Length: 275
Ligand SMILES: NC(=O)c1ccc[n+]([C@@H]2O[C@H](COP(=O)([O-])OP(=O)(O)OC[C@H]3O[C@@H](n4cnc5c(N)ncnc54)[C@H](OP(=O)(O)O)[C@@H]3O)[C@@H](O)[C@H]2O)c1
Image (cartoon, rainbow, N blue to C red; front, side):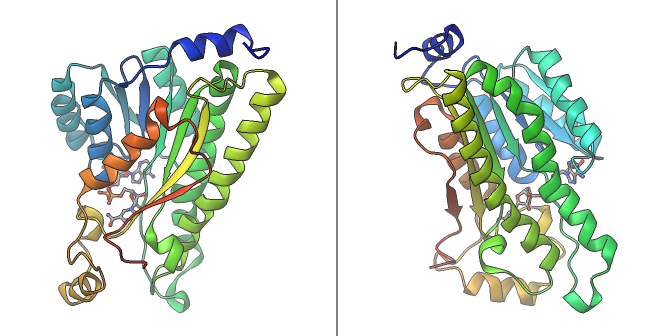
């Protein structure tokens, strides 16, 4: 089989139509968009590990609900802005589930102020959580993916990373940063698989992609004044905010084994806002 190694051969055999047997780690996976992603993956048979930072109560409610899909579910507390927490939580997922197939870098925060009012700490905190977190977590899962010859990384960026937004220099920069990170990991992982002989043209392979949601109805938008929300909605051709489940649908598509020829790409889910 094209000089494939035993590892690549076994990953090819593992290919399946649903996500049964796959393990997904969704950061910020207990509410908002992340909760919908975890639920969607679980309903297709994946075991789901959800990360959260502070809100244990909401996390436990999510776990109870998702376990109704009859798949293993686990919770992992940590700050994705901390490299140590990222390494620890990835190891926890591997210890608990025995493998890790799908990493969704979804945890994110906003600290909005116009440039002149934004202080150093506002900048560093948002960059640490939204961008460095994706770097630390991706770095922690990659050796596992490359050894096996398969895996998915899906970064949740934002339309704001594409268009910019008043009061969001830190957030926009962190979300644009994910584009370069995505494309670089996509290129490096493809080239490393080739060099190690683990590239299997018929297997799920290692792919890295980004999804850019537009404005989605979650707690993240709750602080935005009604007047501003009305202005935002008037700029959306489809005339409404998106639903977390509508983002989860695209993430699920990218996570599947069949999406093996899609890598280094940016997928928008924004009601046509950037046309
Ligand atoms: N909502 C939108 O309109 C929109 C649009 C474009 C992109 N996005 C992106 O989509 C992602 C999810 O957004 P959302 O609206 O679902 O947000 P959300 O409702 O505010 O939920 C954020 C999640 O991230 C977790 N989190 C926050 N800081 C963390 C940290 N330092 N370490 C680990 N986990 C942390 C939270 O955990 P706790 O519950 O413990 O706090 C929570 O589970 C974010 O990356 C966001 O930037 C959102």
